[in-house]
Structure formats: C-alpha cells, structure tokens
Length: 136
Image 1 (cartoon, rainbow, N blue to C red):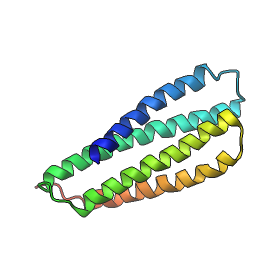
Image 2: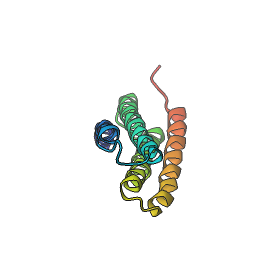
Image 3: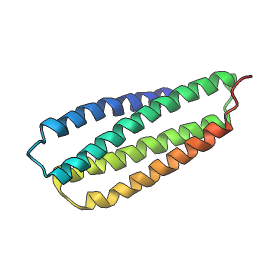
Image 4: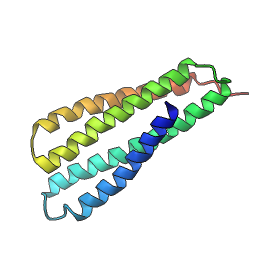
C-alpha cells in the first residue's frame, strides 16, 4: 500500500505541474481572473498533497523497518491518513478544476467534502507521527 501511495503522490506532483502550466498558458485570457485564481488554488493543493503523500510513504517505509515488519497502530494510521489525503485531494482539486472548466456551480458545493477529508488526513497524520517510536 505504501508503494501505491508514493506513486499517487508522484502522479499528483506531475499533474500539478502540468495543470498549473495549462492554467497559466492555455487558459490565459480564456477565463476570468477569479476563475484563474481558483485554478491556481487547485493546482497548489494538488502539488502540496502530492508532496505530503511522498513524505507519508517514506515515513511509513521507515516505520516498517523500525518495527521489524510488524504492523503498528502508527503505520496503520499513516496508511489511512494517506488515503484520506489522496481521496480528499481528488475531490477538492478535481471539483475546482471541473468548476473552472464547466462553470457548473454544483462542483463548488462538492469542494468542502474534499477539504474535510484533507483535514481528517492531516489530523491522522499528526496522531500517527506522535505514536511513532523510532529506534533508539
């Protein structure tokens, strides 16, 4: 599961660069400045959460070696946190990207669901890192 979260994180980073560039160049002059700001916010969140997923995967791999391959509560929490961040990012950033492109306002109503999942993911990340017991 850790490898999958790391891959998702890397793909989020890749997508953030591509979509950020698309918004800055291809959409320039095609959308209002307000919608361009929404696009930028979506791209930033996508990139930051991708970076966070890579960090969580690295932390989970480290925790795995610390605990001699035994599942720990902290590692389980890291996995759940990672999936909450991944799903939350897809909903948050995805709904904003679709909102900008479609101008269908219902997508703006979906965005807070992604935001709540992000909050939960970061909360579980804090709990998991607090529970980690590195060697030494």
